[in-house]
Length: 241
Image (tube, rainbow, N blue to C red; front, side, top):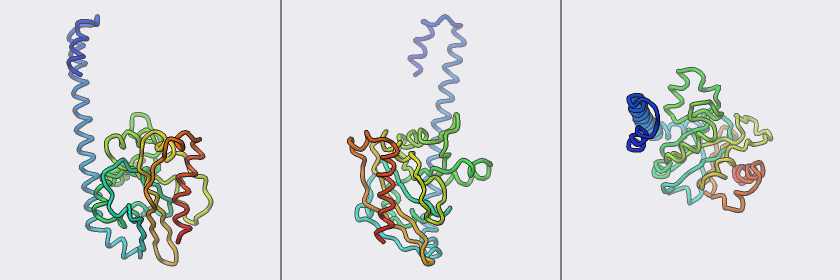
């Protein structure tokens, strides 16, 4: 970056000191951004890992969690992961992750959660939720947000968790899923982890289905059609109970 910029000094008709100043500022901002991202990942990884170690058993007991995991989920290896789940309650992400074996959970870290922008409006909301891996589900200029932000985070080696229903569907109403998961799956080779969570008879039932990828044939389909294909994997898990 610096070498290319120095070459520009002799080829651009601007005062050399201004070009050098631009180079210094650009490199400084790049350095700050890189260090900030490293620190952010460290914080999220540490918070999620600590929460899992300290609170996962408490969550499972308090919410009376019954879990069923496909055998391929029992020992996940590092990969590009996209967790797709239905949405019933604010605690869904933590209950879902609390059912994973430690090694599988660790392989997913750091995990980033698509979170409705309204829950990240105030500074204290951002401070708390972002430390747990939340980021804005809808695009905001100059912020890592929306599906493009999700792709960026995935390219940085971070797992994603998305709720295609787009909001809490407390009563299991029929909701047209949003296309975010399909958009992501069309543009990157994700290993998709379908998960179903339901609150029935004072029990919380979490089911992890078989991990799958979107092949080249499916990737060419219409986004709405691909969305239904992906989310149907989640809905079928509820039907299997």
